[in-house]
Length: 180
Image (tube, rainbow, N blue to C red; front, side):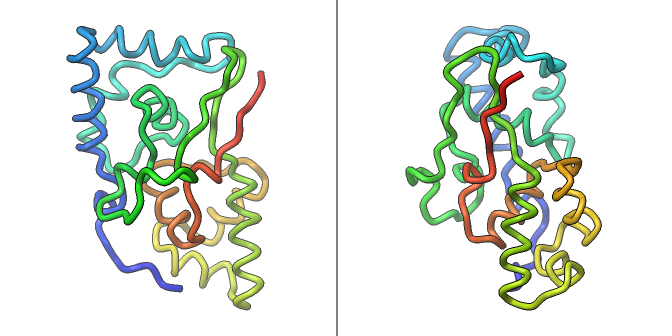
């Protein structure tokens, strides 16, 4: 299945995500530092570098956002990734909901290997090469797809939107709660 050629921002509305974060920030009477303390506080016992306020304040200048950071922002907003996909038919469907970990030593992240195996299943069923799959998805190389199978590949927005659309699955299905 070939995904139509669109601009990266046509797949995930970074400006709308920023606006939603800003509106929630204002509604709660927070500065950006306060937003980051709240977002980072939900996984404070995870040994990861916290998200910086500049990650949000500069997002409008970027065409690509770190997937794990966006997941944390979406959880704070209580929004689905699909709610920022222009024209998505059912952005608030139950299968699109991200499930927040119930403990501060866990974090919700994308599972690169799950993406690889899902793509490989479709690839084999349709008798496609990795190069053909990459061309159909339109934002990742064949090597980039194969590196996901090792768990080393990176998933960000809007790349994960392209892949989920090609797989015809919810982005939440590509996540996993991780314990540290």
